[in-house]
Image 1 (cartoon, one colour):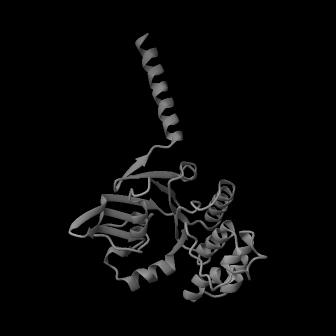
Image 2 (cartoon, rainbow, N blue to C red):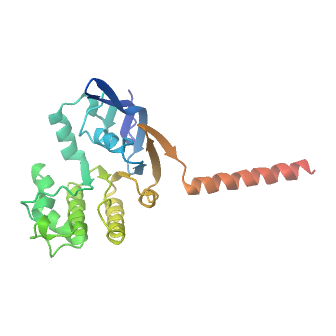
Image 3 (cartoon, one colour):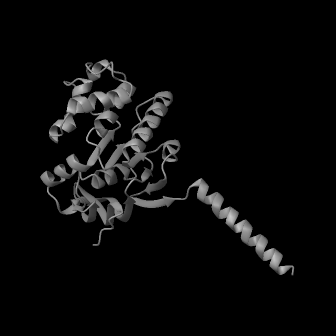
Length: 253
């Protein structure tokens, strides 16, 4: 399979099945997908539609039953766990609905952790700078249990960006937050994403959040359908109106 250098993700004929007792349960139907570098993409769908399964495969957290997943030039479908872990450490950031902070580490230490694991220089200085950007410079020495849900998610966002990832995966990043806090987290996520020039792929059931992305895909029963944006609908209607006017003018001559 030829990989386009403009794509950060290239997926071909991807499937995922699991054994449940004596039956085979198909989680993903054969699907193909390309994500360009720097793009913002939302994958929406109801619970159980397969969107989180797809995200796990795209990020190299799981392997497909069949098909191909390339992150840049890395063939994740052919890699073992150690190789996929190395790709994630060098290229990928994560934000999860459950925050997944290490309870025994302070906010500052949680943000530093990916940089330290990747042996990046100046981990502490970078973590302090990111905590300042997310408005938590005075909370760095607090533990997750001492932080609100919104504060924990801000720490998680700072942690995701510390290694300056090529691509950021976010799984329901505002799902556990109230609407006001969720909006603050949304703004922060997109602002930092633009600053760092990172590709963003997020999974959500929130249509308002999805509409902030340049592109939207809908997951339904393990299949992907491209959603047409409201702007594209307006453009298509406008073009159709223009063609009708041209036809009417021509017919009247």
